[in-house]
Amino acid sequence: MPAIDGKPLGGRLARLIGAEGPIPLARFMAEANAHYYATRDPLGAEGDFVTAPEVSQMFGELVGLWLSDIWTRAGKPSNAHYVELGPGRGTLAEDALRAMRAVRFEPPIHLVETSPALRQSQAGRLPTARWHDDIDSLPETGPLFVIANEFFDALPIRQIQRGENGWHEVMVDWRDGAFVPVTSGPPLDALIPEMLREAPPGSIVETSPAVESAARGLAERIAEQGGTALIVDYGYVGPATGDTLQAVSRHGYADVFAGPGERDLTAHVDFTVLGRTAKKAGLVVHRPIGQGELLESLGIGARTAALVRAAPHRQTELVAARDRLTADDEMGRLFKATAWLARDWPEPAAF
Image (cartoon, rainbow, N blue to C red; front, side, top):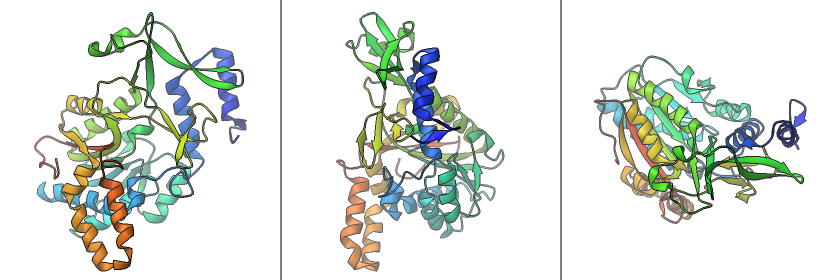
């Protein structure tokens, strides 16, 4: 198993549990994903999964046009910044910025990314970019035009499960040579929304202090400096019960608890929590819509037709990419989009 500081991650976690007892699921997920993203490029056919920008250039181009439209109607502020959270290989930014240049919107590029492997890929596409370890180090003046595509789903979650004697935290233990989930600790009924407290035994409620903290930090910056954020991720409108934690390896589902740091761990995003957090910071929040609805509203049909006219031999490929991004049984419904704007900024297209 690959190592951190000379020690295999799985072995290090097993020893930690042996010394201190079971650890919170959130810590297990945070440690696993930190190692996973620090040691590889997980994207593409040779990796573990594919994101929307990797499916087609149309996704990034339409995002760029969406940003450009708001920038234009906001008076074309000259001190604006392009910000992307978790920018993958830089594919989305490359496509979006190309579309933005068509209307002479060429802001400085800021990428919030901690993975050395992915920073290297991004640098090849975006040599003028500045990198940031977190949201706090973003520029403190000028409106922020933010994109977060599949960023929040990788942040660690807590799970709280209902037993016969109330709701308890899901922890990770090391038993018989394997990591296993267990419930322990004091009752946490007060953390469960009232409408869910009488859910059947075995029910799970997920929360994410990490998601709320990142959302709060981003929203406060936009409220103070102006700008907008387009957030696209797979998720739901809560509150709800359910275990959404999953592991992906080689484009298929895998055991969440096997080989920590060797597969991508994600959980569905609660868009209600995102929206509530942004509203508390003073932003205008637009309800989540499906990714398919977003892209159709922004003209993916017309863009597909234009690309087909330019390259007729690619028609089958281009239509398949459009359908993968927009169809209800593909990415169109599961993936949702929400828009945040500073007060008195223009209404966003598609919402």
